[in-house]
Image (cartoon, rainbow, N blue to C red; front, side, top):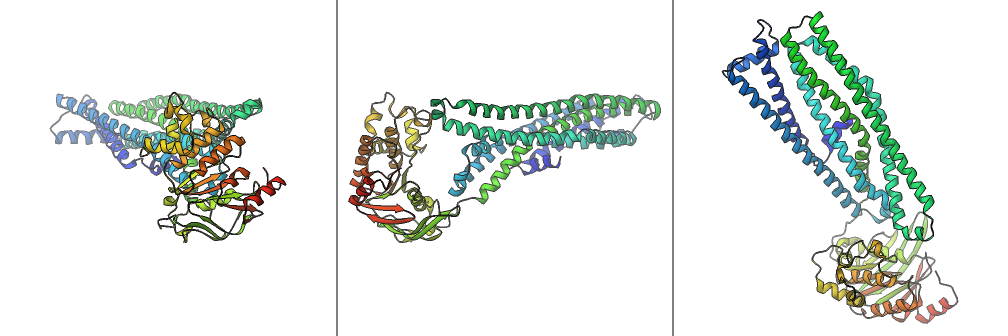
Length: 575
């Protein structure tokens, strides 16, 4: 139960004290109303007045009300209307809090995800991150909702207990003992539900990861008819989720059904003992009966909530753990200087490696502004790593990266990246319109800017020929278009913000020579407009390069176009 209370008070956006105040007032009014009923019963039997009846009579007399008159009935009616009004208010506040808890948790995870350092992001599976942001936040709200309800029932139980003490201390003690016995008898089921809930959360995460990975690679899987084993694996994960869900459901239904019979039976036995052996007056038994029925219903609902919290709390705490992990993995952005890219970008004695492997060793070179610089070399030599270092995604182990003589560590990385256009090797498009793919949802990008970017990328001709133009849907990962068309659209996306640096990472590695030459021609036309750094191992790029840098065995050395062509012919550089 302590875990449920932690969730109720810990959840960001939950407004626990506002909910608590409404619940307390509603419960207090209900008990006052029940207490006001006592004089009605007591007036029919002389001398049968409990402490609660005496308190109620005294309170009523101060406002000029007597047992049995019409004003008392009106008073009771007003009390119960106020009680249900406050209950309605508490319900709405709690419901809005549920929505806020879910929305804020998703917002926080997304913000932290986009701010996480690159080393962390490349180590995490997309499916795991998707599961945390979507599935776990949805199930976390279930944990909060049931925690809030459990707290509500606990408050009601407290007021019922206080009223019962004033009616009959003996019967209240018996009720407390029975209630404790109930919780002890069924406590192990809650623990079992908590274990099953944790397993279910882990199974949901595994299923989400598997589905994400499978859908990302769906075309080659289907093309080779290799889906049978993958489908069997996913079905097994789904079976585990179903099995855990069934066990949780069985445990919950068992508690609900057995507890109903147990508590009703206990109530009947208690009434018999109270009337026959303890000779408690009828008026007190009537009120105790009302309180007992309400208490039994509260106890049943609280037990059900407790089990549902136990089943869902793993998702809530998993999401909170993810928040803490992302907070610890935030990208360090200590620089505040506004970047200017007017002269050059310099690598000054830069060395870098990870996982115990040295990748770049004492690299010294300069990328001149408004020129086309081409990085060549075999796959795995570190060409893409140099781009990542220039983007600030990784920090050098030693040495410095400078932009116009200003160290990258002193520059505002956000402002720098807004000046960069980037086209990756694996070009995939969003499942949205071409407009959405080029603007990435930025409403400030005009149609004129989009048309200019398409023209510079050489994509205007085929886009204009489409029946729906920019409103054409790209399909899953852009598969409605050819590789060359996707590359041109990706290039347009990089150019639409008029960047000062254009980074191209093996953008033509999977294209035919004719398409590659066409894209190289488009890039050549951009010379003098912005600084271009292209990573490649293809000879076609040497014809448009102002300078060529060879990356191999961790070193970076300038070479001529003819030297590159000669080594390519000998087969020293390849895929």
